[in-house]
Length: 292
Ligand code: PUT
Image (tube, rainbow, N blue to C red; front, side, top):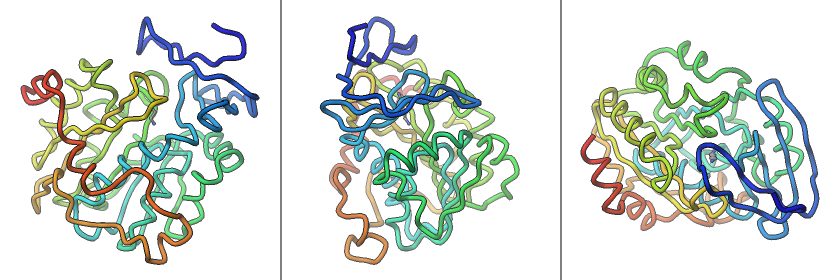
């Protein structure tokens, strides 16, 4: 460990640790679930860290929040009811609320400290909470989903941390089955699905489970996030049986001139071309994912 630097050390990426120079520690706390830290970095702005793992930085959060949200929501016409599991920082809410067709946005985040810290230190991310369509539920996403009436949502977005700690169950088959039940026919799931460079074993399991449960489309996409381990992170996109969903070709666009977008400014990362490109996989990953 280099003094004055934050190094991200975890058994999920043994033998490597990305480091950022720390200008100032802004917050350190321990919630019921995890250690929470916020620091000012010298090159990526303010950084949110949970249990020693970077969750977002001001500079590159757009690449994650925009892709995890618009990949599913631009793949179906007129999404109306959206559920976010995790995502307590509010960034996914900010992006969901760009969609004027959306009438209801529910979010279930387990850790209230993440919500409070984001509102205090990441106002441009937590701005998502200001949309009147948003209802925040503090609680366990697994339990929340079990209580959702069948066929409620057009889209479920799972913005989780890594599968060690409070998010572990969000990567397991029973959870995916609950998501499928909560979706309407032809509804879509987009879930955080780790890095092709580091976690092919986890991705293999996610793909295999999702292919068993989701009988519509099942596709893996990815984006670059320089401050996530290996600099990339992926998403599993699935649809239930119903109106067919072709994830690779967006059918829905975001009208940046409408009232849902005026206060939020332009998109920084997402566009229809990068949407389609996100599904192109390197050969080594394609081979494994296609074989599941
Ligand atoms: N929400 C995504 C976090 C990933 C951390 N490795």
